[in-house]
Length: 529
Image 1: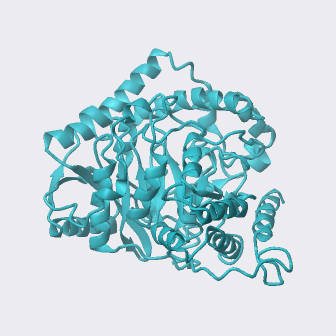
Image 2: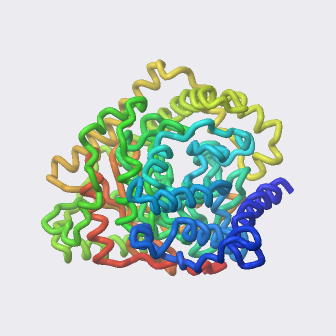
Image 3: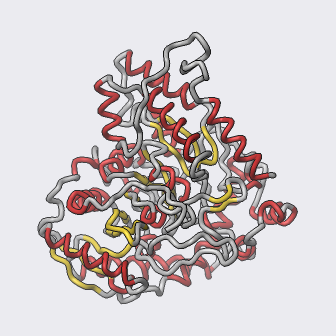
């Protein structure tokens, strides 16, 4: 009953934004019905051009996305990717249309609807991390990155479901499930998993439920759902995008990033997201490292003369993924790149210290967020107690052993934490990714983003078999996943990993690869393979 109430509430919101039965877009006798807008696979860049030309309004585009959410997210295949809609979305769109009519445009995102992962503060909606315990956490101000999006003209369409607590509650969790939002489906095969923790953003953007979306990542939470949904997912250098106003796991590794259907849209969105926040401990180094327009680096010949290293230590977990890597290498070479095999001397040695770091930083960062936000839950300890008291609702398929492990940790002044933090970053970064890039004179490393999506399983949890993104996540350096093919209709991606603040180059590589391979296919919403 609880989940039905949550879903019914969202359907009600969606229905309230639909045209009335009289065929008008407002009250009976109001302005005529808006022209039908086909948003399926419509790129954000193309929508922006149409609005600039006067052939499309933000109101009509926003209404089209609201209608599509009602049609396939809450009905039809019932993707269950959107956890809450912004009740003021159409009002925001109308205001932006009025500004454009008056000759004012805020920026390249003017009038474009966007979906945010439900761990990002946005005024007018809850920020819950998918947890029923946080359903009444209603931010009083936007996250730094949301304020930037609004300033650039974006319409905040709503919030997307996620793996509860960004997949940091239990070692036996199921990606894409939360106690507040239920289970999100993979649009390519509805019984397959959307990966996570940015599950709802991945599914929603793959299904054309918004112009583009924002995910967050600590280790794989943008790259993985982007890969299994045939999206472009960009994990920026830590600090390039502010974390203020985002429910944290790790100050060392957390970041928000674009999730889009094209590389050009990722560059467009990053233009608005990237910005120096002096109140973010990792924000200041971004000064001087943000170009005026990331789109300037999107050139079809960006791969020519470049040198890439294949991290074969990330391969071998699935023969079809290995075959995809070989075809991707061939495509890179055909585009004029040189590709060599490399071996990371510290490969995997960062795993144990990374987990220790995350436990310490989660407790410290979450307690600070809860205090700042005035949340009804005041601490991690209180959340653990709330979950125990409401276990039938919050823990029907997995427990909270990660919460309990984190709560047992001391302060971040502990010598054990400081050693683990330094070891993790050194092993993955200075002695791992960066040592390999510099030692082999490489422009980037490449690896498979992820396996094909596994069947969703609430008994055994996730069936994770392998991925190539972890090193960049722990190093705090950027990575980007771009569609590279499919296995029996299930998408897989290729990840490029680079030096700090190499987003311009990585976007260029991904764009040239995208144009060379044209690997993305739209989802067909098959019940099963």
